[in-house]
Image 1 (cartoon, rainbow, N blue to C red):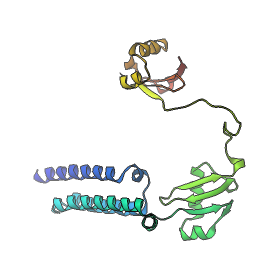
Image 2 (image 1 turned 30 degrees about the horizontal axis):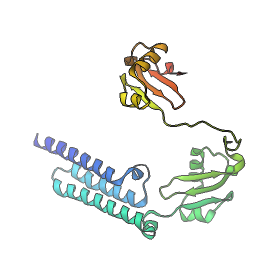
Image 3 (image 1 turned 135 degrees about the vertical axis):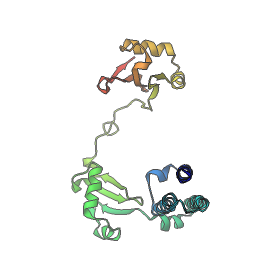
Image 4 (image 1 turned 90 degrees about the vertical axis):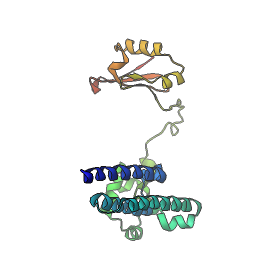
Length: 236
């Protein structure tokens, strides 16, 4: 029983520390791992894995090691931000692999980036024909940034010289059956207005609704609990 509680204690402390480390690393590193981020992540995993797998491993040194790794990462991240040269060697530079519609074979070879990988990433960007690409840049975190040739880009209202209305983020006014009063009052709308609007749409109470949003154009989107297919959009 003592071993069981010891494992639970270790899991809780390790998870709590990892959450703190993730917060220290920041939002950028959650979705984009540089070479240095990857090294830190692998090291953290190895340290935590040894601690959780073997109850005989002293727990305090593991905790101190995780804290030390977090501090090292924080310090190096600050160095990278303040020193471009250090950032170049620790995070690598972007590499152009397609320039003016031509594949730069030497750059593909230098980055050990295969044609199959390139095509896979291009398809993920909605590009199935190389003839559509003007530039493609392999970013330090492995993402492929693509600029299509002008004749293959989607036409925008700016191209057509057409005026457009402002579009902001929608406001969630009902979530899981509960009225979100802060969002509602920020729009200068009352509970009574919301209830009347929902009633006009066929809902007798907010408890029937999983999610309701109001767009900046004034349209109301409702998705009820019973069926996703019953989601509807109306204007008020």
